[in-house]
Structure formats: C-alpha cells, structure tokens
Image (cartoon, rainbow, N blue to C red; front, side):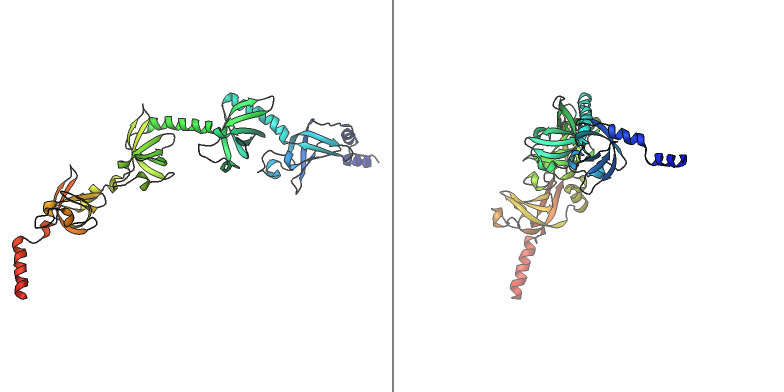
Length: 376
C-alpha cells in the first residue's frame, strides 16, 4: 500500500499543485516563465508556475518586426516577463517580453551614452523627421539630419542594421535620441589620422569619385579627399573630367603630393605605362614615314595626331613642294596624310613633320611630266 502511495505522490505533487492554486499574480507583476510551445500564428505559450496558461502575443514578443518568434525564444527557454492582464475565468495570463527587454535595454542605452559607446540596431520605421531604430528592445529616434548623408533617402534605410551613438536620454519618458552620422564621422576622423600617418607620395591607392568640377575630380580615399586635376586625368585631350570618370566610380590613383599640415592631397589618374611619349619613344624615330590625321590648322601650319596624345607640327613650309599662302587651301581637319618625322625634341615635347620631304624633288617631278607628255 505504501508503495502505491509513493507512486501517486510522484505523479501528482499535492504541495506544488496547491502552491499553484494559491499563487496570486497581478497586472504589472514581473514573472519568470518557461516557453512550452510556439503556435503557428506566432503566439508563444509560457508556463509561469500557476494554474493559468500564459501566452505572449507576437506584438509583445519583440520590437523588431523582422524577427520571427523562433528568432527570439526557444521551447524550454526561461524568460523574464511582465503581466499585462489576467483572466481567472479563462485561466489565462497575457504576458509581454518586449516590455521587460525595453526596461533592461534602456539601462544599456543610458550606459552607452555615458560611455560614448557604439550600439547596433535595426531600422524598423520611417517617421516624420527621421527614423526609428530598435536596439536592445528600445525604440531609439534618429533625426533625419543624423541618419544619412546629405541627399540620401530615408526610405532606403528601412530594414538595415546600423551602428549609432546615443545623443540624448530621457529616463522619465524612457526615450532616447541617437545619431548614425556621429559614428561615421568618428570613423572618418580615425581613418584620416591613420591616412596621414602612413601615406606618402608615390603610393597607389583605390578611392571613390566623390564629386566632379570643371578643373578636376575629388576622390574619397577613406576619411580624406584627394584632388585629381584635369591634366592628371588622362594623357589624351579631354573637354571635361566627366569624359573620363563618373561619380561613384572606384578608381586607382597615385599620390603626387601630400601636405599633412593643410590636409591637401594631390593625385594623378594617369598611368606611366600609358604615357604616350614613352610609347612614341619606343616605336618611332627621326626619318620614319608615318600616317597621321590633321587635328587643327593654324596660320603657320597644321597639327597632326601621330598616336593618341601625341601630335606633330607640319610647318606651312613643309606642306607642299610649292609656296603655300593659306594652310586651309591644302589641308583640312580630318585629312589623313603620310608624313616624314624630321625632328624630335623630347625635352620640349615637340615633333616636326613634313609632307614635302616625301614628295619628288623638283627635277624629278619635271622629268615625270616630260615622260608622260612623250608617251602621249
């Protein structure tokens, strides 16, 4: 008989069941509960140690709408909760996890402000004047001016994970104001300091085109902006820097000069391997015959392109084997003609060309005309 009684006691503990019956709970009470199930509708069932069935509605589980219940709690996990309301008739208790998290989280938010620490959160809502970031169960307001760079779209931030700093805390109203730009600003300052510690003229670095002007291009090197002047963008003649690069392009540049005192950095986008003078030097010489294209006409002659970035001058005296008073009477822009390279001055970057040098001498020309007349 005693063995039977022991078995009954193991199956049904009278003391525990009586305690459950007598245990009182009330609205606002903090309780501990064990997750027993997660329903298909996102409702979480919790055992709080009373006769009541505890449940957490999806909206009271987390402040982050992107998270599923399974991302927040697991069956068998013990969680801290706040009682929202009870129903003795139904034997149920409505509970909230996010409100407990918010209280604990606000303590972390306040501590982060005191420590000037960086926090991470998820952008959950776009509101008038800014956005809401959920962090540690707390909704932190980020003003538009502190959210994105100028010209950025707030809508594009929704759902993104961001780093921010806490600017203001109102413990009485449990509200906080933060800044994403403060983190970015400090990161840029740190990157700027590191750049000027390590960078030197001649270094090759990858940057992003930030802005384009008539005189050049500003490149973001990571905390520091460098300038590529128009002449340093290309070996070729260009009308405008936008002919070479566009805003947002990632380009490889070389540091020409760096002034750590003023913070100015001069860059070049031109590659020495693409230097047309080096290409010319390796492939052309005085006395060589080449085909060129007339690119401009002046009163004293015509400039003709030999290769991209290299032009030579056909002096008016070298255009024909006769006197030429007006260059335009003989040549036009776009004409392709054969010329002889008669002189190269690498120091002054000058090349002299001649059409006349390829024409027959006066006597030879006369003899040819006589032969033609005789044959006729």
